[in-house]
Image 1 (cartoon, rainbow, N blue to C red):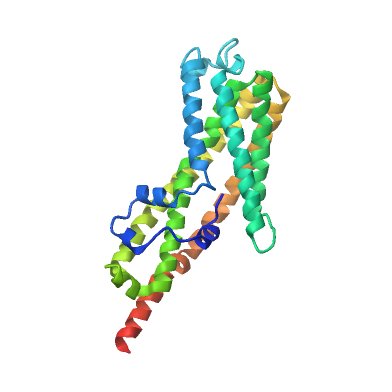
Image 2 (image 1 turned 180 degrees about the vertical axis):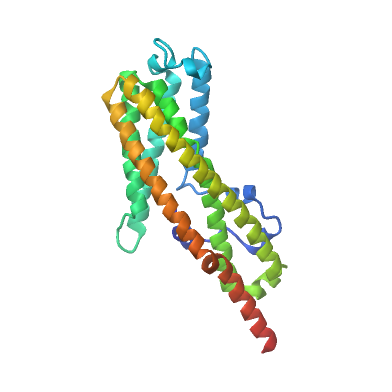
Length: 286
């Protein structure tokens, strides 16, 4: 996972010419990074999972899946194993990048967020590999996977927009109104483009938070009502508890992060434009 500070340390992908048509899609396309493939994993993984449900489930009446001999008691299918294998490969890929980024820091260090992701990745790999090997708990794992991944796409899009906004702020600070005018834009136009993207970023942040909390609340019920009573493998039950602990801890972490973001709104999002405006006004009076 890339942080905003780490992304800003790279060559900027945003330039003032991108102010002409600011949009969520162009931002995602521009800011997509090969070291953060979570949105690819979520979309591809859930697509495979949903296809497996349509093919493997004997009925689409979900309330019947827990009945004896129905979907939850079926052996792990090939599509389920494919989804789990794809996810395991992604977690190894992401884990590799976590350590690469830690090694690139002035002194090798793993952040609290890094530690949380490593714990999550271990728990998921532990829970997904045994249904492939032993051929049990595949359907329960697929539903658990979908519940866990549903909230990831809006989070990833919010991150892409946050990286774009960080680069925009940095360029406004360093190049100021003169740089904007050289590119054919005013400070007011840059402010409107920034506000447009920031508004969309808040939409995706709130969509992630709402879906994350809703999915984790349901995950508690799913683990208690279905996974614990019906999982054949003890490893599946242990992994479910580990992921549940991580998920509930993440809710607390996200709540704290949202409060901090609200406090920093003036300093982070408004100050760069205020500094550029003050510098422009000073130039006029000089």
